[in-house]
Each structure stands twice: as structure tokens, then as C-alpha cells.
Image 1 (cartoon, rainbow, N blue to C red):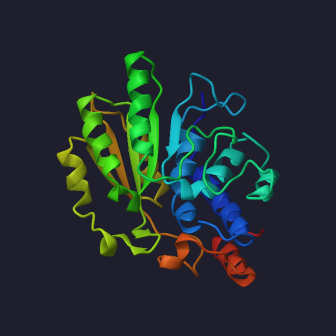
Image 2 (tube, rainbow, N blue to C red):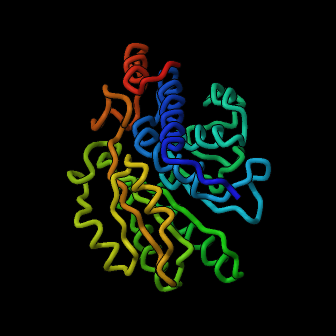
Length: 273
């Protein structure tokens, strides 16, 4: 059983995730903004909330995390490395020939449950896993982290409709509401509001939090489930959080940081490379 570290430790883990993401984004043209926006959520999940054994990541006792927004994979890799599933130093091989670290999650990486990247698939898969676990009477939980632009996919709402019908109170969907997608602002391309009311209309337990307030994120993730009711956490975040040159901009989605920008970001975080 994972001991519960204090909030300050989780904040440090999130900072370390951002440090690794920024370091890789200084070397590669990559999806950096969605990784930085999700760093606090992943730190809370992997370092406090989820049951996971780094020595046996496929243990039947584990909780599941599906990174449906596969382009946020840099933060996932950094979180898994921080939890000890593989050496942090191996992250340097990202996207090199023969490396297991691709630009989207693959099953070659220990701890990755589902190969993702084609958006809209994570929640349907999460519904299937949660249903199997509940049918078998297993206590494991399933977390699905989605991007807000991803909610434009119809398959998300088919799964959202099914989960309450199947009474999946072991399922937690998390929306990284950073308000940008590949080609601009989400609300300009395909508006989602009133987003919370839409989930409520599908009979989900809806929690809205500041996705960078670690205490609130942990509280939302650890709250006891309502019987037979799945939960969705809508986490308001900043795309590119931690890299001032790209925060809240369309460029944050996919870019390479200049050495000066990376240095500025690390300085803003108060860390060194």
C-alpha cells in the first residue's frame, strides 16, 4: 500500500515532472503544453492516490490509469520514472531509434496500460476495464485522464452515457480543462460549455477544481464514491503551465523550446536542469 505523502511532497513531484518535460522539450519538437498542464494531476495520482507497485506494475492489485490524451505522454513518462518503474536517465532516449519512449504511450513502457493517441478511445476502454473489475468483485479503481478538446469525440459521450447505467462507481474520469487544442481555443473550435451540466445530465458525480491546486486535486481524487455513480473531475488548468513563453497560447500544444526559453522556464520553476 502506497503511503500518503504530504501535499508539499506532491508539489515537489509535480515540479520534477515539469522539469523533465521542459528538458525534453528543449531537445525535441513535441507535445509539451498538455504534458505541463497535467503534471499536478499525474503527481497526485502516481505519488499518493493510486495503488501501484513499481516492482510489479502489472500486479492484479493495481489501480489503472489510462492517459486518453496520449499527447501528454511526456508527463506520464516522467511520473512513471519518478515512481521507480524505470531509471529517470532513460528518458533521454525519447523518440530516438530503438527507444521505448515514443511520442504517444505504447505498451513497451512499464506501467502504460493502453496505447493511446487516437482521441476519444480512453473513456470507452476505461468503462470496459471498470465493468470487468466490478463484475469480478475486484476493488481496483480506473482513472481516465482526458483532454478537453478530446470531448468533441462522440465516443466519449457514448461511454459517458454507459458508465452510470453500468453503475461504475470504480471509474473516475478527469478532464484536463486547459482550453486549447491543436489548432486553437477549444471554445472557438467546438464549444463545450456548460460542460459540468452536460456530465450531470448523464448522471455523473461532477467535481470542479483548480487543476494546479494540489490540495483540491487530491481531495477530489480521494473523495469516497457515491454508490453506483461514476465521478468526473473537471480540472481547470493552464496549457504550458511552468513555461512562461508558451503558457495559455496555441503554440504550447506542439513545439520545441529554445535554449533561452527552457532556461527561463526552469528559472521560473526555481529549479536547475
